[in-house]
Structures are given as structure tokens and as C-alpha cells.
Length: 218
Image (cartoon, rainbow, N blue to C red; front, side):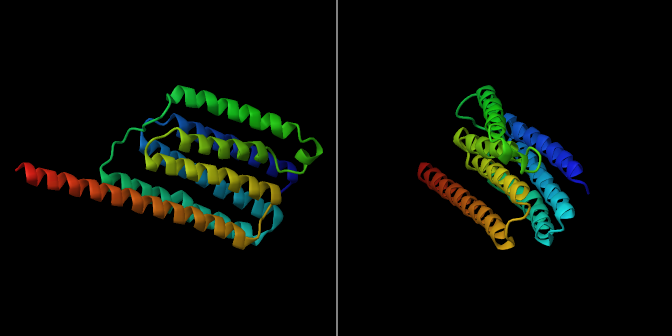
């Protein structure tokens, strides 16, 4: 696979990643945000497979497989189950209007590409537009976490932000040490599990308190 072909594929995947990020920001339903971040993780896995084919780095194949299985399938399924089990409101509860968040997202994307273009010769050593796309994904993920009220939507922002870091790291280094990449994925899984347990614990406590109040009233 030629270098030009790899750059083109990475650029196309970068455009799809930015599109999924916009879908996450614009989502009015939690389910839509979960599906969008799952698609985002799928594109990350594809990028890992492309870079593995181009470089012959076996570690990238392993990471692509783990990303596909864990981040594109298992974690979105866990979030989906939590939404069903808790019977929470399906609507996303933004701190500021979604239109304002979308405007900030556009600003972040533009600034990310401007900063990347200012790097000059350093920019040429990076695969495609992976750096500005990764920066935009990371910052927009943080924006989602800061502008959403519900823990589940904030968790989606965490996954999206980590995807941005992961995409940049793969494209810039073309293969970090395997132990570091697996460690990053395990950190995200741990954070997801902790937040899920906390949300379920709060929900069960609130339900118990409501049941006590009903008994007292009766």
C-alpha cells in the first residue's frame, strides 16, 4: 500500500470521525450519541488496520481488534443496557443550547486545522490530517463532557475524547508500544465501569428513598 493511498484513507476516515463527532454534539437522544461513538470507534479500528497493513506492525492489528471488540461493541452495549435498566430520560440534557455547542465545535475544528498548518515541516511527517482531526476530537469530547448534565452523555464525551487521542497517537507514531495502548483502553474501560456503578448506585438509593416515603405516606 503506497504512502499516498494511506494518507488518502486516513484523511477520509478523519472526515468520518469529525462527522460522527458532530452527530454526538447534535444528538438530542442518548441512544443517538451512543450509536455515533460506536461508529467512531469502528472507524478508529479501521484506521488501525490500514496503518498495520502499511507498516507491517503486528501491534496495530492487535489494537485494531481490541478497539473493534471493546470500544465499538462492548462499551456501547453496556451504555445501552444502563439506559434501559435505569429507565432514564432518553433526551440529552445540555447545559447550553445544542446550537451553541455546534458553533463551538466548528470553532474548535477550524482552530485545530490552523494550529496544525502552522507546524510547517513537522506537519509533513504526520500521516494525513490525523493531528488536527485528533485535536478536534479530543477538545470536542471535553466540550461534550462540560456541556451535558447526565453522566451517561458525559461518558460518551469521554470515549470520544479518548478516541481523538488514540487516533492521533496511532497516525503520528504509527504504532505505540502495545502495553501503553492496552493500558489506555483499560483505563477507559475502568472509568466506564466506575461511572456505571456510581450511576446505578445513585439510582437504587433514590428508588429506595422514594419507596420509604411512599410507605410513610400510606
